[in-house]
Length: 619
Image 1 (cartoon, one colour):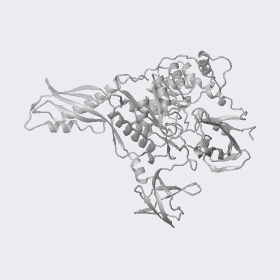
Image 2 (image 1 turned 180 degrees about the horizontal axis):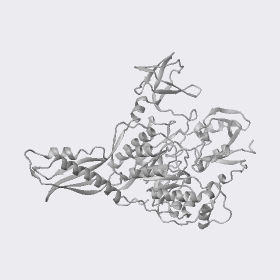
Image 3 (image 1 turned 135 degrees about the horizontal axis):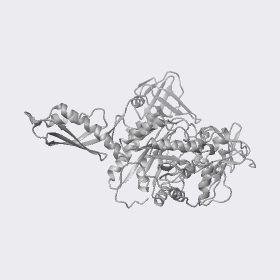
Image 4 (image 1 turned 30 degrees about the horizontal axis):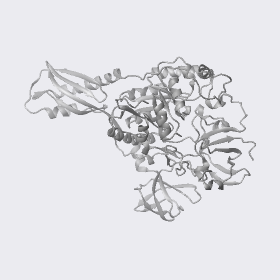
């Protein structure tokens, strides 16, 4: 990314939306763009939406110059190509700004002029892959969540298109797009929008002889990403789009997360106006204080943003459930009464959880709070010294269930006399300018009128507009309140029209066929003839392997790598082979869940772990 430009770089806060209502709330709370699934071929099949619902979101977003991206990021089978082409045409007519895609068949289709953004499923780990995607015709590229700040900086320096990175939410333990655990175990593929979350299940850790090292732990279940403290560093590295994960999350989660990151980004922009600017328009007013820990989380991690440091915890091996925010420490527990040193103010109806000495996570509801005494409905044994976590804040939930934000377009007005009446000139924070006129006979006022005129013109009611400043040039002239009211209504309609006609759609890059610099395998997720044709045009010769999902009858899964992950279980447990403690664990380790067995293969040179299904030859 060329950062020598004189203009400030627009910074986009990109929010998830499972449905139209959530998308609208995300925009109201400060999102510059939202990503939402269509009726098919999104990587979250449970979060699909009709074209009409998406059109509604588009119309709402354009008021604020916000963008709407639609996920069409599954692999596409041959018999679905026409269906996807028709879908894209409908989305373009609905006004969608860009498609987030995985399957390169879309580069071979004759599509309307719509931008394509590279999905996380495309697994962009380095600058070479990012450059290749840019040359192929992608306008925005999301980088792998496993990348460090230095990796991201190198990618940003290598391309001229916008670089997007995840900053918050759930993490896939496998490199995105490269997980086949669900397909092998249950015939449900993440690359087809049907991830069964194999990483959230319980596993036993055993050695080659079958001896149990750990029992019934969620050994592949990662904590949730939280890079709120690294936003400034990411922007400095060249990132232009900050993405929140969560197309299956509820509206309260999205409102809270968007509002929190909006505040962080705005502070950075305000401190660096020559470097950054907002990607959309509109001032956000909140009726609550966002707190990221109150949203669903399994505990937080910064993952690999600072590199692979042994001290950074990444997994939540004891539970895949909501942990929440730290609430205090138990000092005594007797019957239905728990005493604690509290870090937060608790409310009747809150939910609290704690870890027992065996590591299991347990919880209870708060019936009543009396100072440092927590009263519950049934007797419970909470160990002294246990840390309490609040995973339900009743008071916060009640607030979030109501409307909690307004997004306003500020207006600067000039009221001036003209021959035969008065004119109202208006400029808004989007850059729109309109003038409206009222024809009338004016007369001299008996009393000062400025304050009365201001009151009438500022009553913008349930519109998105708010009066920021009024220059009143009428002097001691009387204008009926009804005439001013008519002017005010005209200006809102005129501004709405001006915003619509001045909105510009994103321009897609030309498509090309850059040379492929790597060996294609089934991990490249080629699932149809058009994707294969694209790679042929990029100079690929010989046999091209199809994605495993294209052969539903295939049973040859022996020794099949179903996950490749930068997360290392040995390192997480404190037994990295590069440390002295590493010798205390056997070299050969397996995960077992019922009859299913996976071999863990550790590539310590490149600091990666692979999960191999149906292992044979490992003893």
